[in-house]
Image (cartoon, rainbow, N blue to C red; front, side, top):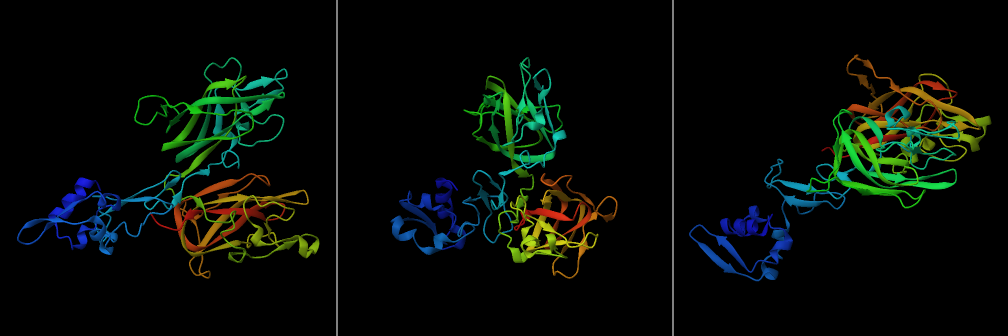
Amino acid sequence: MRLSECVFVLFMHSAHSENNVLCKSEYIAQLHYVFVHTENEKVMYAAHYESLFSSSFFHTGPCHPNPCHNKGTCEISETYRGDTFIGYVCKCPRGFSGVHCQHKCSGPLGMEGGIISNQQITASSTHRALFGLQKWYPYFARLNKKGLVNAWTAAENDRWPWIQINLLRRMRVTGLITQGAKRIGSPEYVKSYKVAYSDDGKTWRTYKVKGKDEDKIFKGNVDNNAPSANSFTPPIEAQYVRIYPQVCRRHCTLRTELLGCELSGCSEPLGMKSGHIQDYQVTASSIFRTLNMDMFTWEPGKARLDKQGKVNAWTAGHSDQSQWLQVDLLVPTKVTGVITQGAKDFGHVQFVGSYKVAYSNDGERWNVYQDQKQGKDKVFQGNFDNDTHRKNVIDPPIYARFIRILPWSWYGRITLRAEILGCTEEE
């Protein structure tokens, strides 16, 4: 609320009315006179702000205590939200979204992890070296990719190079990380770039300088290895994102990652990888022990995305379709997606190729997630190797406390590392 509005409210109503607690504290110190309306007359009441406005009744209302999470700023709004008091809005800091800034929207969208497949990454051209034997394809442009050929490089004769990522659906993109690479021992990287976006892959809009009709030029890298991050404020909402290198060292060579979230904002990791979901919350139908040794027990608590080590996943003790991995989220939670990953057991590649999802609120009565179009159990596509992330969106979302992944097909033994995506607070 602006200072003038604060004075007006105090002028029109009783100073002791609960409806008056609308003034932001930073304005209160600026007021030397407060207008008070009584039944009979309007009286100018002189008061020192320290004695009058520090009283506790001015620190109640929709913004006291602050309903916004993650250091969001609460502001009074004329838009009513069904609250007892007049409405409010939360102004979210960079990287967060949702009505109460409860959703983190700065996670990797899948270039590095592999959720974004090779087919989703295209470019204006590809550089070919060593008589055409060495090809720097666009799908090599994954952040931190290793190897001799570990990035995308545009062809030498490409005057207007670009690399494009198809996210398959409209998503909220809040940032971008870029990285160069070495080619034949020589550092190459993109020093600056523009960003464009599209909903159909045909009509493109270039990201602009805020408040101006001028293309935004982002600062890129200064060497071949250190990542450089830029954020989009406001964020991009689109299916396709293109990076247009502007200035490059030697050749335009790039590794990258997009940051963001689903449009709903409710797609944050719920804690398998981070450990927020503790071991006791993760159970399974059976457990495998390599060589029947306790030290090689592939227990459910190890089913954490990207877990490292010799024993770094859950493996079922039996190979049949009655196996399951269960996560207790402790409270009913909105679940919008699942990420799965396989693992290796002494060099043997193992993964789940497809699975179903079941859910429950009491851990006893279960529902299998349905394919809305076909009217039968939904079978989600799983992994095709031991390490790549495979993300599936659950739309419409599940609201439940317990989630089970039900392996339906597999390679080797049933082996899983996983993350559950969602949020604990409804928008």
